Amino acid sequence: MGSGKRRRPEALVLLVLAAALLSACGTAGGDSFQANLARLDAALSARDFRVAAGTFDGLYREARDSGNWLSLAKRSLAAEGIGDKARATKTAEASLRAFAQNPNVASVAAWLYIRDGRADRALALFPLPLDPGKYLDLWAEARLRLLISRPVADQESCRLLADATGDPSWYLEAALLAMRKGDSFSAQAWLRKGMAGGLHPPASLLWDAGLNRELADSVGPDSPPGDLVLAAGASWLVGDREKALALWQRAKSGGNDSWKVDAATASLLPSGDGALAAARALAARYKSEPEALRYAAAILLREGRPDEALALVPGLEKGSQFLPEALGIELGSAKEGEGRFIARAIRLAEEHRGMAEAREFALRVLLAHGRWDEYLVVYDGASEAERSDPRWWFWETAADLVRGDFSAASQVAEALGASPAGAGGPEGAFAQGLVDSLRGREGEAEERFKAALDLSSEPSQRAAALKEIGRLEESAGRHERAMAAWSAAVAADPDDAEARILATGGNK
Image (cartoon, rainbow, N blue to C red; front, top):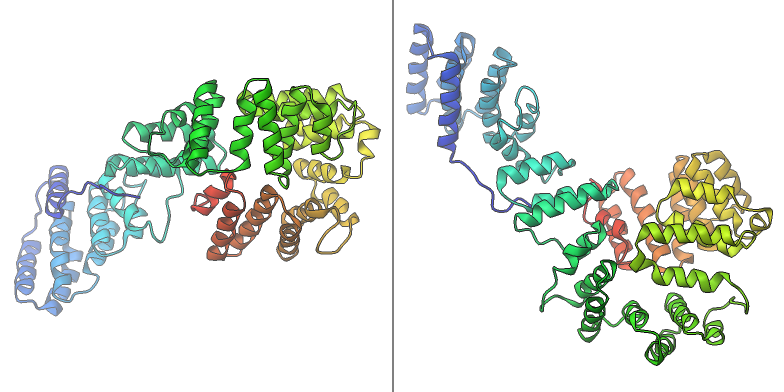
C-alpha cells in the first residue's frame, strides 16, 4: 500500500508552517530571546553541541509566542546534525507544554516528531488539537511511517490516506475492513471508488463483495482461468447465461479443470440429450465428489431420470419429494441470488413438516448464510418427529449459541461425550469447540477444533476448523501461527471469502 505518494519538500512544508505561525501570532519578539538565538546560531555554526544544548534549554524558558517556537523548531534538526540527540523531540514537547491547544504550534511539533522518528507521538496529536482534514499531509506522513508496526484499522483512515497520497489501493484496504465487519454495502462503495480512480481489484474480491456486473465486465482475453470462473458465475447472477457458459468453457479450455466448472456448464445446457450426456459425464468423472454427484442427480431429476438420480445419491428413496426439491433449489441458487434461495429453503421446510431432512436442509442454509433470526424461527417450528432425528443435537446446540445461552449449549455438547474427538463426527467436535471457545476455555476449544479438522473431509468443514484455530492463536498473541492457520484455511477451501480476508490481515 501507499505507492505513488505525493510529498512536499521539507523546506516548503516548513515554509508553509512558518507562514501559518507568523500570520497567527505576529513576529517573534524579545531582545533577550533574539540575543540568545544569535548565540545559538553561533554555536550551531561552530558545531558546539554542548553550548547549543544549554542555549536551547534557556530559550525554551524565554519563548513567549509561537513565532519564538518556530525559530527553535527550524534550528532543532541542525542541532541533531552536530550531536544533540532528540533535540527535535525536546523542542516539540516544550512547545506543546507552552501552547497545548494551539493547532499551529501542534503542527510544527508533529513535523518535528516525524523528523525525529517519533511518528507515534505525531499521530497522537490527531484529531485534537490537529484536525486530519486540515493537516492531511502531516497526518498521512505520520500514519504511513507507522504502517509496519500499527496497521490501518479503520475505513476513514484509509480514505484519508487515499486522499493524501493519490493512491486508490487504499480504497481496497477500506473494502477489506468493511467486509471483515460484514458490511458488504460499504465494501462495494469503496471498491467502486477505487475503480473510478484506476484500481483493478482482484476478481475474487469483486466476487466476495457482490459486484457481479463489475466482475463480469472485468475479464479480458488474458485473464487467468480462475478469474474466468468467477466472472462466469457473476454473469450467471446478472442473467447473462450465454456469457456465463462461454466463460466457463474458456476457463475449462484454459486449464481450470474442476467439478465445479463441469457442473456449472452442465446445468446451463438446455434440456435434452446434451444435458443428459453432460450429467452422466459429470457423475462418471467425479465419482468421489459428493457435491458433483448432487448436481448430476439434480440435472437427471430435471430431465425425468429419477432411477439414475437414485443410483448417484445415497439415501434418495423412490417417491421422496424432499431430496429432488432440495437439489433443485441448490441447483438454481446461484442464478436466483441469496434472498430467493433462502425463501425457497424455508418454504420447503414448512411444506414438508415432519420430514427431518427438509427441516435440516433449511437450517443448514440459514446457518451458512448467517440468518440467525430466521434460523431460530425455523428451529422453533420443528415438530416432535423432526426433533427425534439423531442429528438434532447439532441444530439444538447452534440454536443455543445463536441465543447466547452458552450454558445450555455446553450441556448439550457435554452430553455427547467428553472425548476430544467428540460425538457426532466433525460437526460434534466443532460444536463443542465453539462452546468451549465462547466460555473462555481456549485450550479445550483448540483440541476440539483440531479434532474436527482431523475428522473432516469436506473443504468447508476443514476451513471452518482452521479459521477457529487461527482466531484462538491470534487472541493468544501468536500472530504468525494465526496467519499460518488462516492460510491453511484458504488452501483447504479457496472459495471461503472470510478465510481469504483473514489470511491477508483484514482482521486487523
